[in-house]
Every structure is written in structure tokens, then in C-alpha cells.
Amino acid sequence: MPTVTIDDRIVEVPAGTNLIEAGQRVGIQIPHYCWHPRLSVVGQCRMCMVEIEGMPKLQTACSTQVVKDGMVVRTKTPAVLEAQRAIMEFLLINHPLDCPICDQAGECALQDYGFKHGQAFSRFRYEEKRTYPEKERVPLGPHVLLNMNRCIHCTRCVRFTQEISGTGEIGFFQRGARKEIGVFPGRPLDNPLSANVVDICPVGALTSTRFRFAERVWYLDKKPSLCTGCDVGCNVTIEHRRGRIRRYKPRLNPEVNDHWLCDFGRTTAERYDELPRLLAPRIRKDGTERAVSWREALDTTTQRLRARSNEGPLAFLGSGFLSSEEAFLLAALADAVDSPHRAIWVDSGPARRIPNPRGWIEGRDAAPNRRGAELAGLVPGKGGIDASELLVGDAAARCSFLFVADSDFGRAAHDPKVVERLRGAQFLVVMGWADTPLARVADIALPVATHAEREGTFVNVEGRLQRFSPAFPPPSQVREALSVLGELLARFRPELAGRSIAEVFADMAAQRPAFSGRRWEAIPATGTVLESIARVAPAAEG
Ligand code: SF4
Ligand code: SF4
Ligand code: FES
Image (cartoon, rainbow, N blue to C red):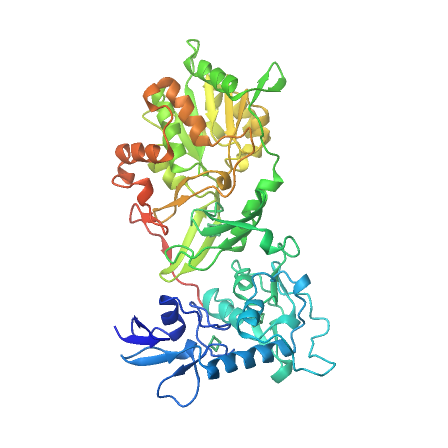
């Protein structure tokens, strides 16, 4: 591999690496607007100028590749600093500088580079800036608004729709100083990946319809997590303010979602605001409900599980929203009472597709972890009742005890007919974060944390095991499902009391072949593939 010297630091890089990436490897940030690691190089913004020994003029770092040994690059010479100042001055001449009302403020490359590489005064002495009248809030599609006055003409959005989504809705119109971004007539920006252009627009020209004026970004706490919209398992950053999720941003994982998220996935956290929350354990008796302590709720559940009068099956229904560890404990609870009746229900959803450097991943489940729950053992034993017998057939009416481990397991949890069917069990326990119609008819309702409030693993459609962790704590009376299931299990198997998630994972790895040899602490940040079952769809046609 060739070596290059950047600001006196020597770095070895694969041939063909450009100078921006080579600099990043040794902690040298070369400012840039138009370059993006997954888009073609256009050399449009001229912000990335560097000096290269032996070359008479400054060169753009984005379009200069390291091809052989011995290149010497300088990024902070007087000529480079002057070029950066000149570009900043040029970009700001016509910029509206409306940061106080711009959603991008606080995460804007124009602001950041203005501070780092610009100058504190303007030499522009004319009254009129170039503006685009009536182009301050142009809907390009359902998720994206354009403010043309803020655009710096970097073409990232154009290249995204040409090269990544393959849909090509965005283009440049007009010429010279009047050049402007827009969509082609009759072709709104409504492809399933459309909101990614908001993320890659370096300034506030493209903003999100959903997030518009919702929050100043510096008030948001950011925590890594996973999307629960489907079984692709996109890596996200949850951005929340005091436990209220305001948006998801894509988190780089080249093995899964790369730099991207689908538009649907970005909306999924809104479900936590749409449904009422289950906030305390609740017992329903003779038609009246009362909030109870966790001890009373779990004591009553245990008594019903142990009741000698149980004449029908004891059944356990999970969902694809359970973590692998929770599914493992639910299956272990079924084992502890000798029940083969354990299953999960997962709605199939419209296909969701995400591109990464290997191709496209396609998810078809409307939940993130059917695969992990099944591999963890949540499948019917010999002669066991399956999920459709409970939801569509009359199996629930035969059950003396039914434990539904997710109050919002799918559309059926809101279907009065299915709710009535499940209510046919002699004793119904429903655990979940949402106070759904199903939770409201349960004999016992157990409030547990959302995925943003707990930790665990999901296994995606390609068999990739990925960890997620809590972004914020659950409300005071709400517990993690893992601890609830662990406590119930310990009443039958006291030796398993008080096990941490790492210990539960170790038990699962010891007992379930798919997880064999894995350790909780050793799961890499990008996940690890359990099985080679990749379902990679062909790339979209451009
Ligand atoms: S709208 Fe944003 S991404 Fe598109 S060209 Fe303008 S500045 Fe670049
Ligand atoms: S593809 Fe699936 S996991 Fe990825 S963002 Fe969309 S819904 Fe979420
Ligand atoms: S990043 Fe190099 S010219 Fe824009």
C-alpha cells in the first residue's frame, strides 16, 4: 500500500484512497461540503483545497487519490487557509444567515466551517443578496422541504437520487448564479429513502417535514440503538429530549444500513407517542381494574401458573419485538411449567429495502427479531399450540392460562375479534409497554420498557446478531421485560434468580446452537452473523 505524508504524519492507505479519507485516518480533518464517501466525486465546492509538493497550484483533496509512495500534502499552509477563507466568504455572500430559525443550526457544516475556516467580518457592501423569492419552503415530497436561499449547490442531493436511491427525482435547473435545485415536473421526491437527502445536505437547505421546528438540536441527547420497523435491523441514533424521542438518525454500519435509513423507519418511534402507555401493574377482577404492586402482580401470575385446577394448556405468545434474551426466558418459563405451547406472532409488512456496499438488504417482517426469538427457542414444542391457532383458531378458549408477552405484538392486538378470542383463555396475562385493547381486557397487565429503555439483541434478516442499549430509563413503575421474566422464572428455578443480561445471554449461548460460542461482551459494534442466510436483493435499477 502506498504511503502519503499529510502535515508531517505518515499514513499508509490502499491505492486509490483520496486525501480526505487518508487525512481522517491520522486525525486530520480536511473541510469539505460536496464530497461524501458513498457518492461520486464532483469537486464542486472547492472547500477541500490542499497543497501537494511538486504541484504548482492547490488541489482538491476529494478528487486527488494516493496512487504511489511519496506524496507530501499540507493542509494548513497560508495559501490553503486563504483559499478556505475565500470559499467561505463566497458561500456566505448570498447566504441568508437565518440560523436562529434554521433547523440545521447546531449541526450545520456552514456554521462549523464558518467558525473554523472563515472570517469574522464581511466585505460584501451591496444591499441586495441573491435570493430565490417564493422558494423558502418548497415541498419536494412528503418528507422533505427545500429552502433554496440556503443551498450551496453541492449536488449531494442530486447524486443521492441518481446513485443511491436510483430514482433521479432531483436536478439542477437554470444556470449560473440563478442555478437552483428542484424536482422534475410530475416527479415528487417520494421514494422510500427520500429523507436521507436531509441528512446529507450539509446546510439547512433541505429539512425534514416531520422534524421541522420540533426541537433545537443542541437540546437532544443521542444514544445508539436499532430501528424496530422491520427485520433489516438498521443502526440508528435515538435523539431524545428527556425521554421523548424526537427523531432517528442513521448510524453508520456498512454491513447493514451503511449511511442510510428508510423513511418508514424514521417514523416508527412515533408509535410510542400514539398509543397510551401502561404505567403500573394492573389486576382486573370481576370487571374492575386496580393498580397493584409488582409483588402482587407476579405472585398472582405465579399462583395461576402453579394452580392445580389448571386443566387446559398453559400457553405463551411472544412477538418479534422481544429481544432474543427475553424470548429465551419466555421459552424457559414455558419449559419450567412443562408447556410445549410457546410461539411468536409477527406481522408481515411491506418490503423495506436498504442499500449498503454489498447490495440491498430487504426486510419483510414488521418487527425486528422474529429470527432471534425463534433461534432462542420460542417455537412450539411437540404438539404445541402455534400462534395462528391462538389468533385465528379457537385454541385460546381451551387454555387455562395464556401469557401474551407483548401487548402490541401486531395489528391483531388491536382487532376486537382477536382480542375477544385471546380473552377466551381462563386467565390472561399481558405484558407490554402499550395499553392496547388486549392489555385492557387482561386479568393481569404488566408494564415493561420500550426498546429505547432496555437492552438486548436482535437478529436481522441476514442472521446478524446486533446489540441495542437503553437511551433513557423507563418510567418509575415500569420494569425491563428481562427482569420480569427472570423473576417469574426464578420462582420455578430459584438457582436462576438475579441473572444479568450477560448471564442470560451465556445461558442462551450454552443451550441454543445458533448462539453457541458467542459472548455478550464480545458482540462487535457492527454485529456478527449467526448463520449464512443472507437474502440480498439485486441493486435497484438506476
Ligand atoms: S439542497 Fe443541500 S444537498 Fe442539495 S445541492 Fe443544495 S446544499 Fe447541496
Ligand atoms: S429498512 Fe427496516 S430497519 Fe431499516 S430503517 Fe427501514 S424500517 Fe427500520
Ligand atoms: S469536497 Fe472537494 S471540492 Fe467539494
